Image 1: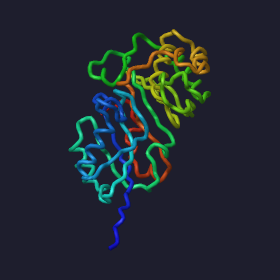
Image 2: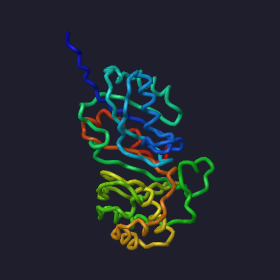
Image 3: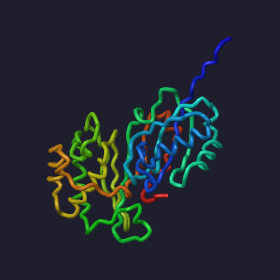
Image 4: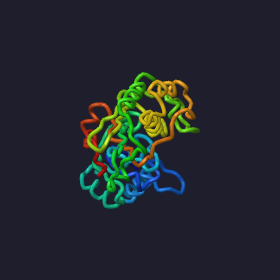
Length: 270
């Protein structure tokens, strides 16, 4: 009698999550993470053990208004819109699954990503409703100097100065393509896009740029900090609750399947 060979189907899953409820994306002991909660829900509904691979790590308290992961499953009906609806009912209020769809078996949520975009929000006036999602600077900041300093990020490729001490990255080289501040009324947002990011990199950059804005550093000194490639010279990391992962880019075939609802996000923490 012939044995039936099960061929697993790969799926991409598009989701958003509120980092306030989690200790980051990646599974870790004695902590609630997005990856663990998603795997448990998928395993329960599909009735098979599901392991999920994400597009990258996010730190504790950091949000994602658009995140992408992949998983393999025997059930070839999981791309049904009703499955995403059912999955949302199993997940807590901190995670929202937007879409699940089939991809080629060798498509990879992390390794096939071409870029990631983060936004960091500042509240320029005290706001009792947004303190969970926007950081209030200690004093007035100069965005002209901060943008001058941010422009140096596009001229370098090694960002060891903004990497968490003791991180296990094999290389600290990243290609930053966009880095700028915009002010809109009582809010300001820093947008940064790169092919990859180091652990804690965006928060360390923002914290050091705020030192420029406060007048503690000049833009040229910010550039010098990058060149030193030593974390001890950079500023303190900005708080995680104001940081959002808002976009992950892929080749055209995958991007057509994704809904980039959050790319135009100015301030919409949802």
